[in-house]
Image (cartoon, rainbow, N blue to C red; front, side, top):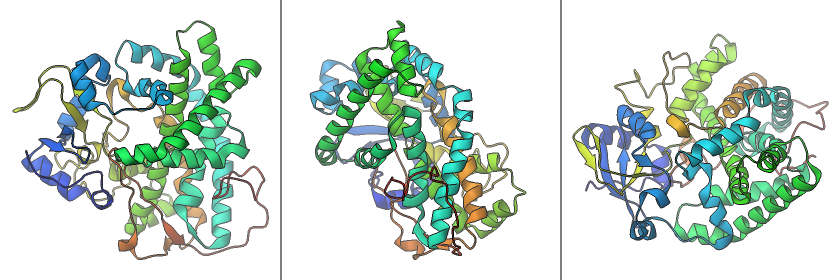
Length: 423
């Protein structure tokens, strides 16, 4: 078993690519032991990662894949009030996954996402205007985080007064790495679950036109969505609906600041924003590792065989920098074509929120480079730190400066401040 550093550590997340390049070259399919003492396999080459994401022999549901003894070893204990959340669509295999995804597709349509464009523009412009008025600010706290948080809260019908609490709860959730983190997060998780149950019950009584109300209607119309499945679906939409975009906007802005030529190209406008966002997705890989899968039988990747009943992680951040697929993968090429990155995964578990994340990024990056003139880091580059996390890769903060300008009028509906409320 190859000895590698802790890939959930902040130190690794700061620059994971040298290790991934070594793994692709020397040990593309490698057995490791994480900090929790549990073994797992990492798959790092693009071709193998793409195959793993689509292979039905790599199941998501440990209750279907593993024996009772294996489940006891591989799945952590969770309090009773959290058990419904462990049965989310993310952890299901067909046919249950197919049924649940079809239901959410009914209410989370491309048209509904596109209808959000005007609102996302308004929120973004308000946040950017306030940031520029200060001249020095944390771009993660005051733009990258509140933008997707406001959007997902509005989609779910969460009252604006509750956004600060939502932010605190979800921050605690995505910060879970170790068993101790899970224990420390239990109070926040309990409050979040209790709040969501109350929100669902309110939609049952009063209806509405948000996603929760639409999911309640689907349940009541006999679409076989149980109470626990509905709760798990809302929970998944909250977490998946904003964290990837937070990391994309913050890490993508840092990537542009690291490459003045790319920043200037985007600022001048000749680089179309859609391919630029795809390249920033590839380059930063906000989701570093796809969520765990389990082998239902022996699975071979080339000459490497992973036995049945093993935990497997497809390393998206490595696949997206595979030199066999991407020319000069460590360069930021905003007009890169083709760009078959795997930032949103692939197969039946392809990220449901990808269209929303793309839309938010396509609006946010032009506003950042256009309306924050002279944007630059406000701290030494080496002082930036990254969140410890197994699946995600994101900064803890991004202090920047720009040419300050007075704000004469900021619409009241321009979205939350850094604290999540209107000034």
